[in-house]
Length: 375
Image (cartoon, rainbow, N blue to C red; front, side):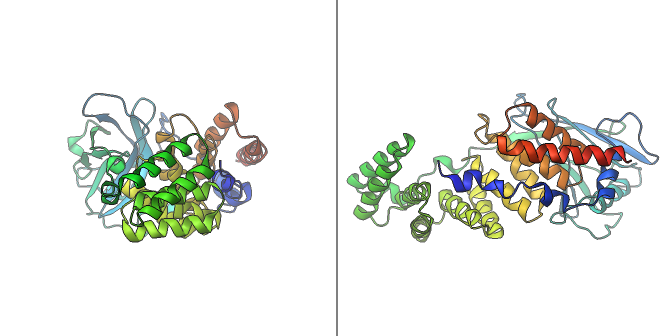
């Protein structure tokens, strides 16, 4: 397995990077803030609650993000729990409109360190606001927040998710359909060799396939993957760029380009390429979501980083990338959600952490504990 991309987050997941995003006072304030499901709320505040359900009645396959959308801009205000419910604090709603939600929106913007999403300007009190859920592979119903009299107290009811057709994973490039028989044979043999770890032999077979048919885009992508696994990044980049010239709709092209950019610590380019890969096939693999989370983290785009890592954890049911939980903890702390972030780090250390994470995770938890004691 190639080391650079699988372990490149060693340089990204540093305690100093996280604590560079906030001072001690900010962290202490975050630790003192209201928590999900508190029984007592500050004056003028309420806890908006609700549930997310699938139309077919099955449980959610992962945690859904709850989005507050106001005037075309959106903000993640919560994630569903293991019971598929959610809650978030906002200013009290009134029958006059969504002024309470808008005030809550502004409060979230001013308190959150994620400067990459949502609007940080004053929002008009008459702005139309909707609540929806976001989960890969599903579309969401919306709940309009401008009519609080339609709610049962502060419970907005159910947000329904509709399962979409499967992603582009089964769409075959036209160049694969038109490739000569011998080229297809070498292509199939190369894929089988990759599955059993015979990367060098796979490169030979992929190279034969594209020699027979230079327009065989999927073979070029396969060759790029194999070359990348052999630490030949320049050759891999050349191969997938050739594939892009032939068929730019193959997500593997942008996965490889994103991994190469991350190895070069070109975080912005990596995020751009991986975003395109995820758009083309959001359910193809957990790894693009992991690497894009690291790239967004390095760019201080913590909202995007959290979205990516939660998608990775949803797809990676076998926990191939177990350090995702560590990264989620760091992201939450960087977003000033310190108490939830600390809990995630504790759970990670209590499970089967990567040994290199133990020292920095414990250092962060000690720092959080010290600041909490000074409240």
